[in-house]
Length: 417
Image (cartoon, rainbow, N blue to C red):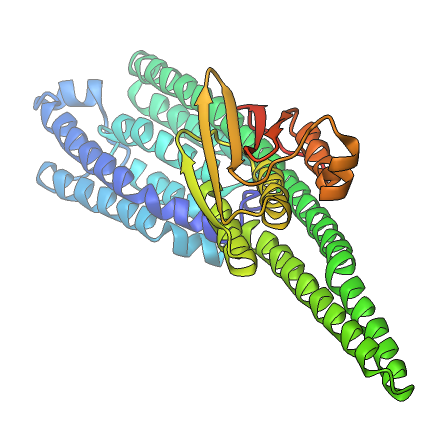
């Protein structure tokens, strides 16, 4: 016999948990057995006819013997987990041996003890043994053999009465066993599914980390690495002019390199802020981090006004945050203003997020003006909006500012990296 598929510690915990109800049940059986013994007719011929004794016991000692029998079975139940640790078969073997021993001395109360202890041992079997069907069959055979002995003592009439009660209880026990087995199978299925989900989650997490690292590498390459490479080239050129004695030209190049370095520093700070914001679960917190970075780098103050926010996934929040970052960066670089507003509202499962500035603005139909002012950077915003199944609307006019509106559904979903 083997332990249940659960680890042994969990099995022992389950056996300890059921000891209390079983002990209460056995105490009730003890009172019932004493009542049965005292209810037998006192006339010797009637007593012999209805419930003869296999081993003669004085009437005054019978209640005490019943108490001893019930107490010993209770002890075997209480120490069941300990017995199970020593040898698994002792869990049910010890109480069944006690029941056999006391059956000879308690023929009159034997039906109560036999019928009453059957479900106790059966439930312990379900919990303690993996091949519980075999053990339950052995226990049932043992109880039937006790019934045969009892019937041989008291006769067929009372034997059939006890058998009918035993069969009824046996049907209930086996029905419960089927139900218990079904629950165990469902639990195993759920545990297997949970294990598979954990594995899938770890794989997705690892894939996300790899994708994020690749994205960070690309963005740092586009900002910090290229900026530093440009600064190095400019400083080498300045040194060359200094060697030639052309200090004015060298100074001009050094000033240009300083501007390039500041730009690379600003863009690197924005990139690092974007990385930090991906750890936040709240869109207002993410946008506040971006606004603080823009203010620190470009001295542009951003006011955030958000009402209802849909329950977006982290990947959706990341895309929304990057759209806002690119839009605010455009404001800082090209709008010639120190004020911007972010407003958001939810209406009929449609979320609208607006980035508003009151700067110089531009003509959305003038391609030369777009190229000159750098607003071709809006292309990245359009691409991110497509990933969100959203739409970007840009409204701008010269000297009247610009409004970039992101409109997208309120549905939560995970975006593929």
